[in-house]
Image 1 (spheres, rainbow, N blue to C red):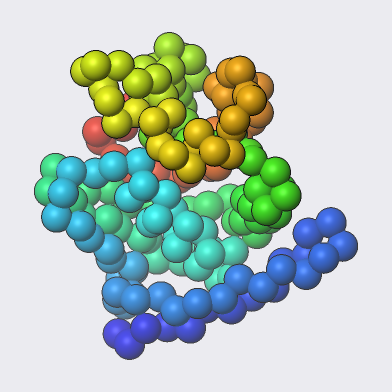
Image 2: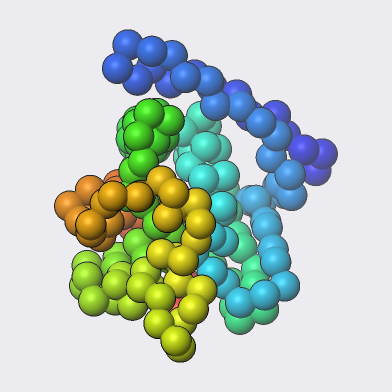
Length: 177
């Protein structure tokens, strides 16, 4: 199908936010996206945001499916999608004013491990075996200068807000519920 326009407005704390764009790769049986590489946390997030935007505007929608070299996953029903999207927009609005402690790879490891901080720390901390950990990202270093421990309560809250509903809607045998 041709790219389908997407536009709806959400009121958050007295302000109206407009979510708009175009949905590429939409088919009659759902949205399909792909990348020829192993699935990464960013892939889940990209597919989730597209799926959530569709669900928040249309309600009951066809699945969103992502194909990767190492398998595929899909998202199904999203209970109360407008509220979930509003929570993400609140976090985004906060992030426009201050650094929020959401780090996709660390948060993914944290959530899929049942909120084990040791798993998040292993993705966050640089080591000789993991020199490209998230803490080595110059953008994080700049935004978090002076922050002693970024994997704190705000990290937990952000991970739960962003990834909790995603994991509840996710159908992927590679990710334990």
